[in-house]
Amino acid sequence: MDIGTFRGITTLLIMIAFLGIVFWAYSKRRKKDFDEAKNLPFADEDKRDRHDAGHSKDSAHSRHDEGDKNS
Image 1 (spheres, one colour):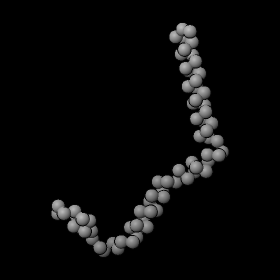
Image 2 (cartoon, one colour; image 1 turned 45 degrees about the horizontal axis):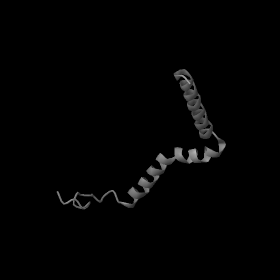
Image 3 (tube, rainbow, N blue to C red; image 1 turned 90 degrees about the horizontal axis):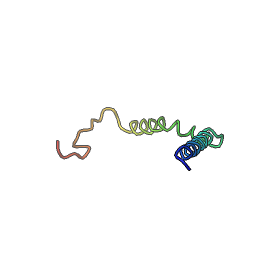
Image 4 (cartoon, rainbow, N blue to C red; image 1 turned 180 degrees about the vertical axis):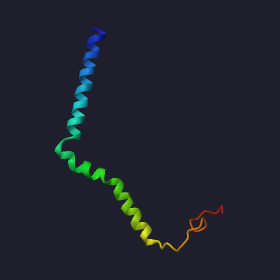
């Protein structure tokens, strides 16, 4: 087995792995999971908005209120 045959086999194996990943990513069974994943950044904002709604805008948070003793 010379180096050319080895490189050809390696290229073929990498191409098969790549095509396998592509078919896995675009399969219909994965659609629901990927739809949930694409909305994750917006879910963080919803949690942050609900957390911020619990605090009134008039209450100022000082460094002392947050537990920082260096102020």
